[in-house]
Image (cartoon, rainbow, N blue to C red; front, side, top):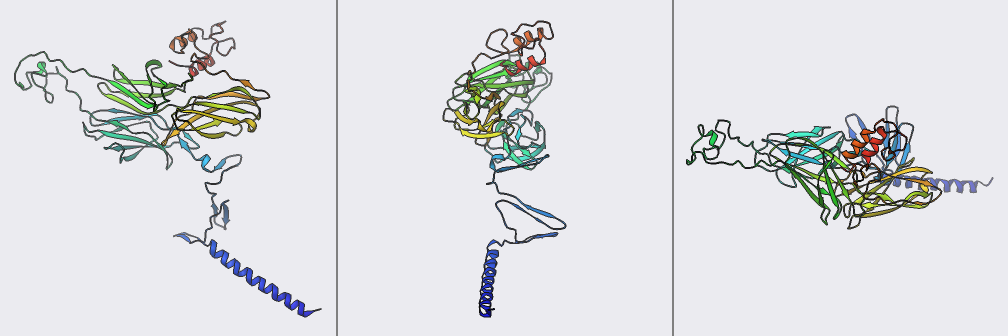
Length: 463
């Protein structure tokens, strides 16, 4: 045996081991991080990894999380974990109604609908200056709150935040309201506030003369009860307001997509109002409905209405692997999210142009053969609309062009007035469970009129 060769080989291995040891020490120093401690644990040298990882001991397991740059999905029989910005939870914006009263304002708002999260709490913000600052208070998972202890004649400004547990997902736009003292009533035989013989002759016995004049003909100013609705739709589009399912007012949105509608001559009480928009192609948006409580003699403001986009497709059936065009109109320059349902739901985003129009060509190669639905929603400056109507299409072996929606409802217009309202509902109700209904009333062509036909009528409802 050549011991000289062995000796040199051992020497080389020793030098290599020394080099590796030094490299490891330098590498450790590069990835070393500071310790994190508390009264009951020490986390030593945590290393942030892109893919995440796990460390264990007899008493704990520590999981490091993947960063938001990673997108993907991990599933089991009981949960789905989604990572990345694409799956960050969002929610629709609440719409506030503010009704002023004596030293108080009654606030009601529409329910905020969360995506990938459930809304568990709302916060009411109160400010004395438009734009804030606001003082927020948690009110629980409710849709109404009365803010008391306010000063009559002082303008206040309110916002609503929607929370998923401790995470705030969305906040509404601001709505103003000014508390007012109740108006003194003449004729009650007592002196109220600044009443005088000249202002309330019937109470002259208990009020100061106020400069004489005796029993002049005092005419009380008219008491105005009104509701004002403001929000955004599509540029130069028609916006329709329904009161208790009947058309109450219409207006044309401005070039900036903003609109305002008002109704007066109402009596105090609770009403159901609905709003929808109609785009330049005559396609109607989904119906946005909300309850409003009106106080007699007060102006109630409903602001922050964000009408959902319209939506349509260019094919009723698309050959698998071909594109299907999904298009519609929304608020100018808004970000439109398009959802296509399948075994896995697909989300795609596109920006509307300056007129609010949007178009997305969806590759159907990822879809299974069969029926599918698509819908869209819009976001702008932190506000998020509700989803549009869901439009159906089939994935198959051929392409069949779709017929664009017309202003006349596709179904449910039983008296041919281009509307679906209580008249059509009454005609449907007459044939409810009666034998041999006309084909025009039997909306699903099953030989009878039942709740399915009423559901179809409700889907095409215009008021």
